[in-house]
Length: 394
Image (cartoon, rainbow, N blue to C red):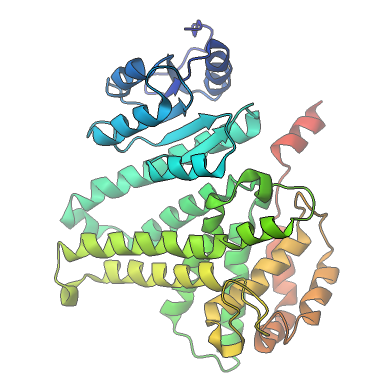
């Protein structure tokens, strides 16, 4: 095992991370990187040792687990972790040199939260660890609150939903780091369009608009299921890669549907269906709209979109609003496969899509609200990426 004594001195109560790898060199890299972030790092070079450390107080907040180890491999370690009540809720990030999609899918099905491929890239490693810890903290909070019915009833439902939804949305963003403040901007674009359309004939209640805004950040949650080689490809996708990329819409809807079922089951065990409390109903309504947006924000008004080629009024309003918001924001911001467009060029492109890509009424609302879109884009503009910050510091 490598000497971890060089890890910076840490304050009492620092977050503990367990790293598991049979290669001392990999452990040393991980320990140094995470130590710089202020985490308390403990290490194991084999499965049995990892399992002992995982249930020893203080229980790790996160485990980075190498899959390919002699003896007890990472798959078996993961299975034991999920079977142990002490460790079943610890998020596990798979660390692997494998790039086979079947291995990734198998890891997620076995209970892993994410994966990192070797060789490690510092910005990606740090971002994934930070996001997993944030998400784990929110899940722990929810488990604690659900154990106390009275506390659950007293919680401020709107704030809790917003925090959880944004945590999940940021989890998807770590797979596509260049998206920056995309979820905040698109969330505000959607509300802006909805508020305008309410004044021009669309009947939407205040509650619906609030739920629409709150659920919008989950529109791309399905990207968690897309491999980095596709998501971060700097050039055009092949036809086969496009087929895979398009699955992020139904995959996102499925993930939200599973969360919806979990909430309903949990609530039904406490109250009969006719007696669900207002906060639970509100959360279920929010997840329903989020599922709708995730599934339909790539449909097109003329029926040429995906995943189902819906057209016109067949497309839910939520999907029509997000379709325009998503495209505008993608155009005006830099991506790995394109440079940023000017706001004016993006506006012209949106107007060209009237009646083909976009609902004509939504485009009309966009024209009326164009200045507000620009203000939102400037207010929540992305800062420099980790790589750009490093370049500036060099």
